[in-house]
Image 1 (cartoon, rainbow, N blue to C red):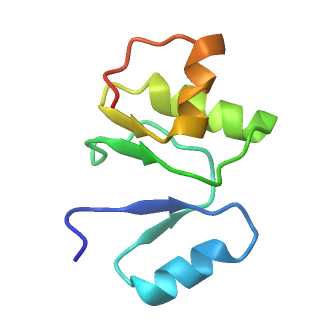
Image 2: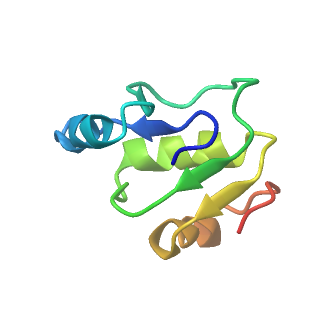
Length: 88
């Protein structure tokens, strides 16, 4: 069961459409994350990659004023780009 609004980042590889088919309440995020008062936390999981686009996403998420949960791969980004966001 999904609680609250869940946004799934669409990388253009077809995975997002599969997620929405399985969980119709999920909202696709096709552009980079922006400040949105409805977002109370970000969860960044596996598969984002290490491209410049991925780094821009992470930077915007980590500079938002909400808690962030990162998987291991994305937590390595913090070595090169420290931030002040609360994260797990």
